[in-house]
Image (cartoon, rainbow, N blue to C red):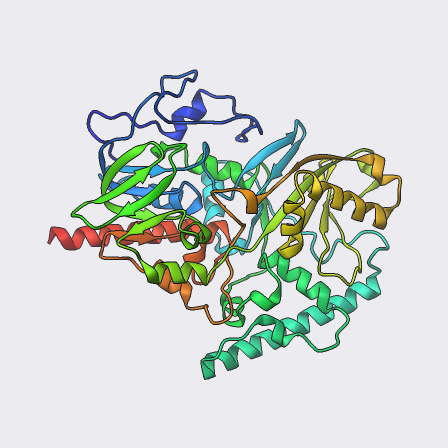
Length: 465
């Protein structure tokens, strides 16, 4: 990866070498920045270059994937990141000195096809291959085994009907909301909807049956012991990055693309856009001339919401390692709880959909309070004194995310391909929302960045002929 002559752009690798970095995981308070006037332990005061050959907007998994794919291209490349860190919706913190917490993505979904598995091996990150706690590791009497078996049976039947409905939708060209295949009157419907809020970040009435069917799930799910976000940070270490550099306008009206940012203006021959769909849909990032098809596609792929909360657990040996706690609540507004992940003294709570948004809107601490109330209702009042809130995510209120991961609205399954299509051989698009089969995942995002980088190289090759 080339640098612009006369301009020194700091790589994340150099920053990491000069900062406190514990076992590949940044502490909650650690922040890195690259911007004019920034005063730090190292001389990282520099301005943006006036021009680069390829600008990448966003240093999440897609942006990092694009940058790494271009690192031996000989092109001058710069990743513009609005935050003061890499990873986007992948972020690992130490919630406590002995508790690792992935605020965002935490599972290597479809691990046998997940490109981050090999990356973890190359970077010496331990991959934990233990079974996830979702089905086999239920704990307690809040969801008796007989009831749980009946629920799983109804859930499996729902997915069977959904697959058949998607086949019919493909044949007749008429997409449906996934909620239409719920069995009328089934007592488990609210909890099946709750599963959708975890998987899709939204209830079934806003999920396309064709999009849901397109997702490829091999049912192999592993974890990164030091954190998925920490793995992304290590993966992005060689990349040239400009932090605290929010891009607000991409002007492609001239011979070169002009990029307006919070740190100044630069131009590029090619631009790879990797920001979440809601930033495009809300026009937080604008294009000139306007790109109405991209705007429509982004609005057809809104971000759902999935939030996590981490609670310290006193007397942890009373609960099993890697257990699952969930009640037969008969509600959609419910949490699911991972007991002692990696054997740590904690419980990780997970909320999705409208309920997660309500809790976020209620303010800091609402997720933790709801978690503790629900856990106490399952395990008894003694647990109120045993649980201490440590940290919680608020992805809907993150101005550079505005949600967790995309789903296609009914009738909009084709918008993923539309969003991914390059414009005029100069603007390229990546991100989990552009992945045809692995949307909503970090590896789907990373792979899409690699795909967009390949499109840039092909476009340049055509010019050179």
